[in-house]
Image (cartoon, rainbow, N blue to C red):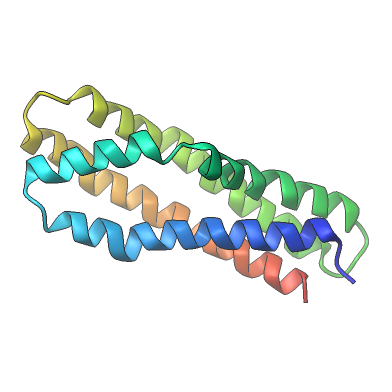
Length: 149
């Protein structure tokens, strides 16, 4: 039987991956249809609201819970899957911290300036990094779910 930490890791990572996929397949394509001023305003508001308490629980949980599960599952059949899932989550967070967050900050700093230039500097680079972290988050979820079977 899997540990409760592994089950919580699956749930948390699944919610986080779902959040990432929602941005990838619905929110960003919807925003792409907006004019520059609408796009930049919407992204600035998202970037202000996303790092709230619920998101931070998920953001930290996708690292902490698999780490605890990996430790408590040592020697079990699912342990290698949990460890690789944890690695995917860590790399995803590194992409967020080193890639997406600086872009978010640059977009915030450009408020009141040229929205077209701000969007050009932001959108494609942010989306490329977001695709990577979404794929890593989804991989982490699948690996954890496989380990929990």
